[in-house]
Image 1 (spheres, rainbow, N blue to C red):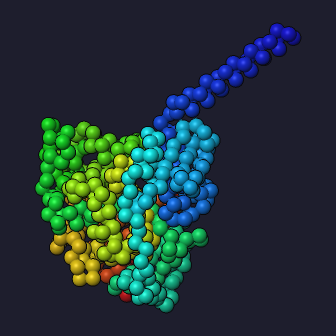
Image 2: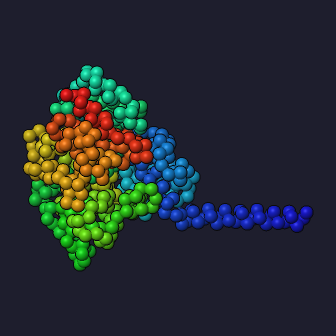
Length: 459
């Protein structure tokens, strides 16, 4: 019996030692998957607390934990509103990551932990002046439709989709209908995810108009000039056909998650990737490419401080997008792939701006014909445009003509983002429809059905 007790004690001691070693390993050298999870949790909670004014526990439970990887259910966060930081870790302690809120730039992941350096970067604060007391888009009054057919579409949960947070319908330049999910309103800034890429492309257009960039530019980054990457043009980057390696799989530690949550210099990371395809001939959707585009247009401005306020002065303020916050990485490069927060009405302003060909209140903000060029099919793809736009809607990205078959006009084009963010733009119908929410792709939601029903109802 004593031998058995000694053996049990030995086993327990071994188990305690193993647990201590495991805890020490997780604390001092956590696997990248844990660091990606904690980085994601810290960043999403930070942005929603300090930009959208939401409750941290609600964001953690609903936005971070509910739809994601099982690992995320074990994440805990701590918010310091005085220091404007959010830390997150497995059980709150392991693999810890931190995100910091900065003036005018939203929140940034700080994977190297240098919070002081991250805080030293600041942008332009959102415009505080009130909009005119006028009908949208000049002011913020909505002229809601009383059409029962439109109401029928928007009151149908199957049409607006699970997790819907906002739908705004713009017809002939006016908001005719809108709906909001519980806890959200016309004043809530919402994340567009990859719809940010289209806004970033428009910012590139403002620099083209100013003569600071040209689509034919090559030799875009210094290290590229000595190898095959030297021939990559700005147009190749815009059309997602650079030929550069980049893994866009969000399910694990891939290039995209590594870039967003483990790299303080996102553009530098993406720019270090080698060629794996023929330049201009192979389509490869890449958030790394979009962040490199941000670096290119910021460098083209020449003055770092001026570049950090450029989105607001060149685009957001002229369009009245007062809520818009384009977030930057730790080093101050805008995350033009993923991180623009704006109210649904401000996303609608940008959609209307595209519908109007880059003109706002009679002022040409983008070069003449630039938006038409953005929506032309890329050489390497029949469903993606030359300027960070989709020609087909969600789920139809590899299926040319699917939108027409679904009942949408041939000239429909799309902004699309992760978890169900969409803005279809239909010039022939003078129609823009913003749909924002938390709707993972696995649910199979197709906004095409809602948009086709709205086209029919508004005739």
